[in-house]
Length: 114
Image 1: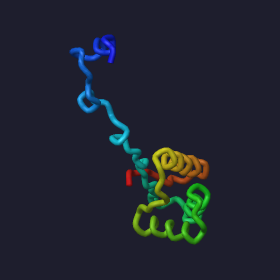
Image 2: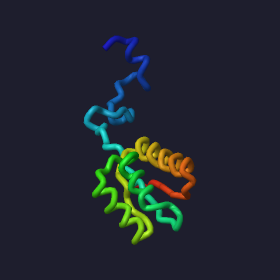
Image 3: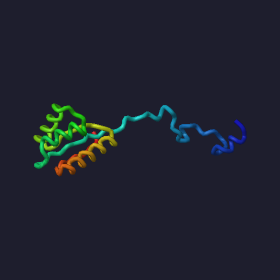
Image 4: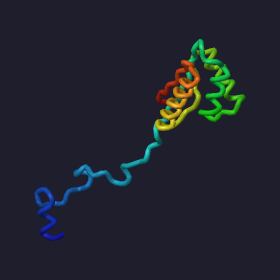
């Protein structure tokens, strides 16, 4: 090590990586993105056919699965339409609200962390 390198270090010595707070490659582990449940909420005005259409068009469920989810929402008041990373969940919630507004239905959709 040259004298110039020593001047750049505190007290003229070498700083160890752990002491300097530098993350080493083994300390950084990629994490899976947090996932969010997209929920449909029951109301007394939105038709069952419209909810099935939303589940097929926006959430890409086949007709049988869409009917099952719709009936669950109808009976229990709320149901999971799908589970996605944040950005996709947020987009699907927005699309449901836009489509419901276009068809003059008060269908509510929300998202929550899994």
